[in-house]
Image (cartoon, rainbow, N blue to C red; front, side):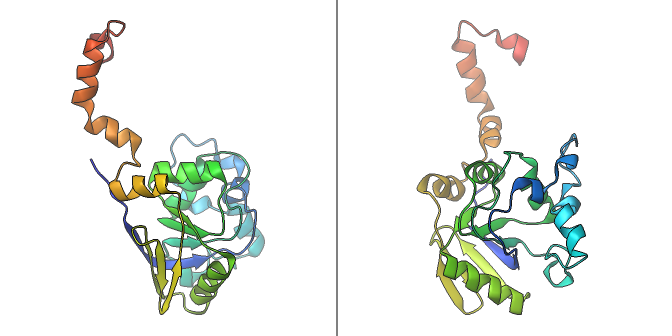
Length: 200
């Protein structure tokens, strides 16, 4: 089943600050969960508690937003897959930032969540736009590599490999395996060291 991701549209939510690590995104005490269900309500749990309702994820005007605008080195720290899962369960479908930690970026790609980069000035302007007008409509276009928010249009970037995976719908490795199950069976049947009847 092909799941192409050519563009993501919605409202933006700003999260200002560099080096926001995965422990801040989802504290370690939530890693004991068996599934990722319910993680969204705990995204940025400690930051939200400390800010007493003033964290963007708690503010009324950003509820339902789907594009997270961050700064430099977002998702650094431990490689926990729970971090992008928590963000996704909250409702985020794409991220725009100055830079992303490599493992966090890879985990997002595996989930179908594009993380595009932009220069500091563009990110700051986008954060200011959605701060001043939380209802502004935003679109991240992976084919043109542009972000549009209200009257503002800016350039975004993503490595060609990841970009092509999203646009072609090949980011979902598990989905590709399931879709190609007959070919997998046919290939396995030809291999002398696999007894397909035991694994089918």
